[in-house]
Amino acid sequence: MRIIAQCPGCGNRWLLDSGVADRRIKCLKCHRLFKVPKLDEVPKAVKVIKRAKGTIYVDEAGKIYG
Image (cartoon, rainbow, N blue to C red):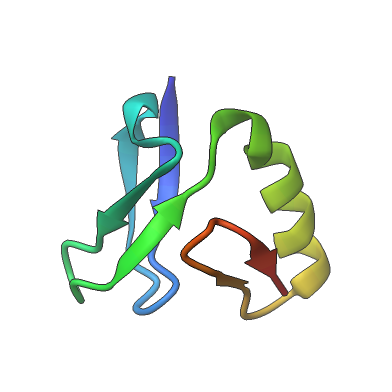
């Protein structure tokens, strides 16, 4: 399974293996750290993103605000 990740800082996107789920990764373009949600949290994250229609924030504990 592949995950499309998008950096909340610069918007850079790329495909990642599912092994990065529930881990923090560093953007290859702007070097910002951000957390990729657990696979079972992805549907919840998608709902939050759709409702936010803009900027969302994921804290270091993985909680999503938007």
